[in-house]
Length: 148
View 1 (cartoon, one colour):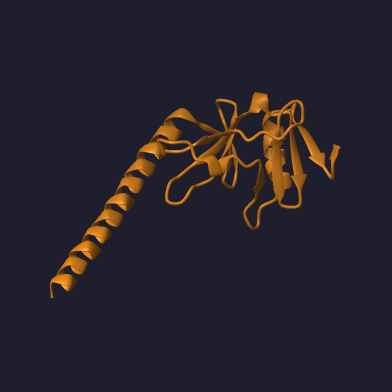
View 2 (view 1 turned 90 degrees about the vertical axis):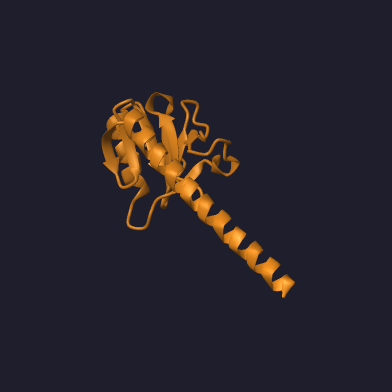
């Protein structure tokens, strides 16, 4: 009987802990969304890809239950390489740039340092490139390994 009681208490404590974590993530996401809206004003958009009035290119890239955004300054982008439904942001020396990852998490998330990104179903990597080039004319398009 005692064993069942201890097991029940542990199970209830675990469930309560999970509920508190979910509530904390929701609160952090809400604060983070307000901060993003206040600091980054949308100028142009294609799906989840945004160019801001502050001269930034960003897109939503959540991590688990936390919201997140990848961000590059348009002035730091030299080219965008497009292949099928993937794209890579490159610096002026045409090296892949990982950009900056914005998240409500207090510690940096290492898994968000990759440099090649997929577009969502029904979207086109070429349209993402057009969005960037439309707002930063100095950016070059690279397709099939060649500057267009």
